[in-house]
Image 1 (cartoon, rainbow, N blue to C red):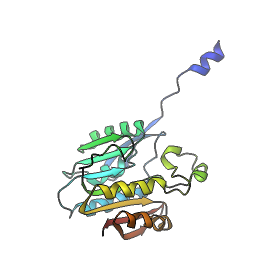
Image 2 (cartoon, rainbow, N blue to C red):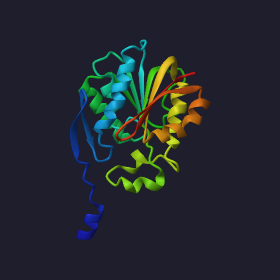
Image 3 (cartoon, one colour):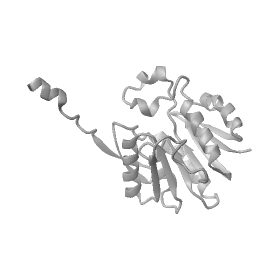
Image 4 (cartoon, rainbow, N blue to C red):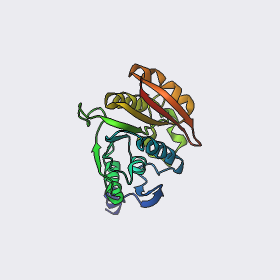
Length: 215
């Protein structure tokens, strides 16, 4: 009986932690990616673009706990739409948005299904999984769902580019985070197929950022 009770006992909830991330404090746990300090560069670049962008909303794809998008729009009047397919990540993103005082609409589900056809954004932020499926064991501390990018690591990134292109204002920009400059080059075919161009690529200590815009 004791053994049966042990086997059927509910799992302990993930341990929660709080971490400063630029202008916001982020609550997270071990079911999502820990906010990496170097990824704040994506928030900073997005904010730089927003400072001179036309009025309009911001979209964050693969938002996780929401830290990158929240840091980008914090203390602005921009409406933020955040999308992730993992329900618990969406719960954390909602909690973090409320704590940061950001006007955010967090949508849980496939990015191809949770946006209305008529929704347009002046800026799209995307931080998709980019680790090839065969290599996820190299990062044992990270939840597999948050880092597994398919056979070549870029399946979700290509989906992000396609969705961003469908919902981007004519003068809008996409800030895409990947694992390396080489990966940015590998998605270039999809970028061009979607009517976008790569305006700039920045090499970072932990990855790379690509700035995309309409041709």
